[in-house]
Image (cartoon, rainbow, N blue to C red; front, side):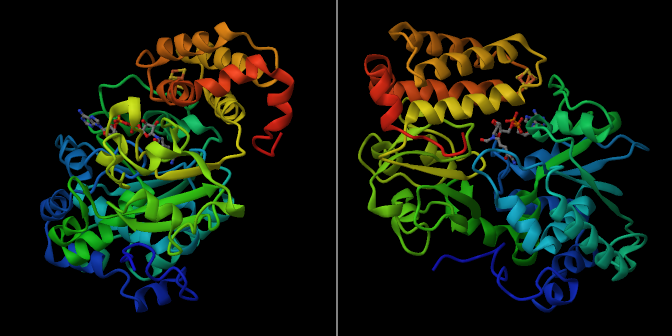
Length: 442
Ligand code: L3W
Ligand code: SF4
């Protein structure tokens, strides 16, 4: 049985309340940090833990924190990115729904470490229940003296606010999020400068994912070295995985990084195998923004060794034979799933969500969606397949923010691994449309 650092008490009745959360050891990390550690010592523990950003990029959290500029007399901010919108990713919503105090405790400790006296949790606008849950939990924490002035007599002040998001996927890109938080349209900014130098209102800002911030709690409770003992190589700690698609037991799982992918899919402790006794055809391991992998490369590396749920193992082989851990949104496709239809579905999403600032993304996502649509609906030509590859190459690396890459990679990888299925849609347009049903929501 894998250890649980974030979800250990998820099924305890009332764990969403301050009282029960405290009975289970909650707010120990705040007491330890504010009473016995300096901000720099908290940063040091996070560095030692090896924690990497859980939103998708996997950037080392302690390093990001140490980049924060500290000019005299200028406010610093911590902003939690809770704009979870990546297709296939629902772990942050789960955490906020069931254990809101884990995030709030992490926000207090992290804000203390960074010297922020005002912090924000920017929650996807559609998540009204979670916004209310967090607001109620913040009020409880404030009443108990964990927020506000002179927290626990430490002399440290913190105000924590929940901000409903602007209702667009792109508002989860950190600089678009900051624009939106400032009350503007959520258009990504050109980086550099990174938020660590010029973020919210032009001030030094750290933007971290919900899960990253919640992970700071066990890191402070147990020490960074203990956290670093979990996992494999530079993939330390535990990771929340949102599992969906054709699985016997979809849901949110906390795994030790380094778990074999095969065990994650097939063991009863996790997903319990492919639903309805079907075979696995393909997976998207890290949310829709990462390359799709066929079953054989999902389970094994190109050299035949088992593939592991870690940053390194999932990307082993580059995009030729690998993918990315991303946000941990693990989607399984069974043998009946149509790759063309599912790729079109992803493309529709990115076209719809492109903010339109850069031409390769604005125009390219639309082109890809149109060409995939005609392939799926039996009007495609053989040359469309290479046209898609060409358009994806023209988007990749040529845009302001990663949405362009995120739109290009699923298309390029689907063709790389399933070109025969794209060709079949051209050769057998009627059969291919009628044989594969794809996603049900059309
Ligand atoms: C200071 C430097 N800071 C980098 C910071 C940077 C950011 C972090 C990572 O994209 C990915 C994307 C999605 N000085 C710095 C520095 N930083 N160099 O480090 O930066 P970066 O640019 O590698 O990535 P990003 O812009 O944060 C995130 C992918 O995640 N993704 C999407 C997930 C979406 C969700 C969701 O809906 N919740 O998780 C999934 O794979 O495509 O590639 O903070 O400022 N020199
Ligand atoms: Fe907007 Fe797309 Fe450019 Fe990102 S890549 S800034 S979403 S147009």
